[in-house]
Picture 1 (tube, one colour):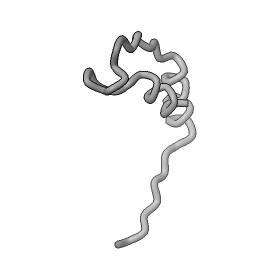
Picture 2 (cartoon, helix red, strand yellow):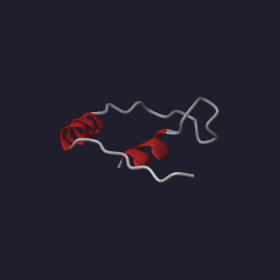
Picture 3 (cartoon, rainbow, N blue to C red):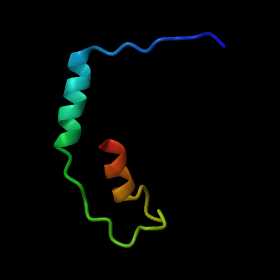
Picture 4 (cartoon, rainbow, N blue to C red):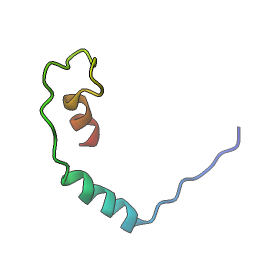
Length: 48
């Protein structure tokens, strides 16, 4: 396996952070078991 480096410009990361902060979260009605896709509580924690 070869080592590699991921380089992302700061402006791209800043833009991503701003977009994630503006996310409008939907209500996660009865989805504790992930039957209807990603659990919103988990996704919010991941984004934070």
